Length: 88
Image (cartoon, rainbow, N blue to C red; front, top):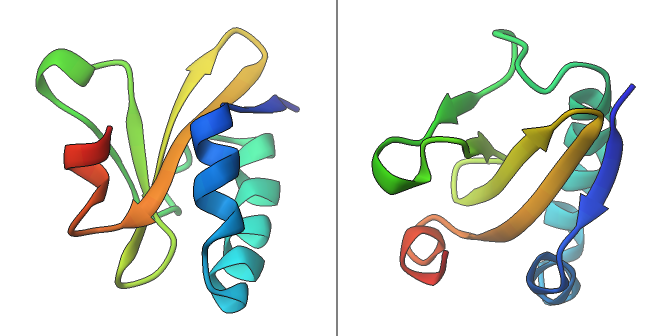
């Protein structure tokens, strides 16, 4: 199982999310802790300069950006899909 590490930016993003998105995020994080690369999840490896980062679709409009390092799942940002890639 991976240890979840949230950056300060992720924590501040999470606080302003609607409560139903926070609940969905908690469910997805519990699943990611066990296998952050499962093909059963709506994940995608980011390309370009961010090639060690992954994107998870929380729902139709919200995305979570994370990376994996040894035994840690590092959470960077969670934002609306129109903002996530500019703010990251």
